[in-house]
Length: 154
Image 1 (cartoon, rainbow, N blue to C red):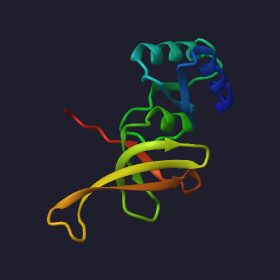
Image 2: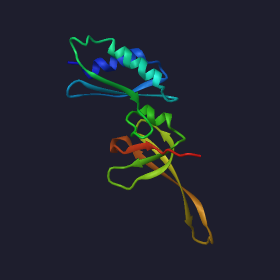
Image 3: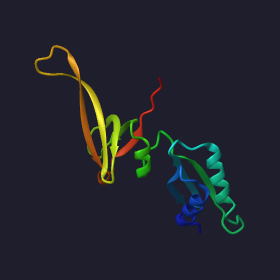
């Protein structure tokens, strides 16, 4: 039976420092899914190279499996610390477990959590018009918030 550790080792053999492993999952029937990312994204060609390296490391007569190697993608939630750091300065949506979603700019990441800057228009006392107000929110990794990039088109 193929293990997560075997797949992780093979992925690390096939990628350079600019790329990183996000997750490996092996489901019933040896259905293997590998998600990769890179500091500047990852190409389909790199995913193909990693897939071929993994496939070439197993004998199909001994281990039958289905393999999918792909990018972690913009629409998926962040899973590893490096995804947070590579997205500093980008708009994200945070879905805390027991609170409303927050959309804002990812401004800081450390070992415990991350900070989001949210700009709103508010009517302040002694002001006739609404003014832009910046709120900073702190989220802890231990609270397991779901975080995704916000895709915008300009």
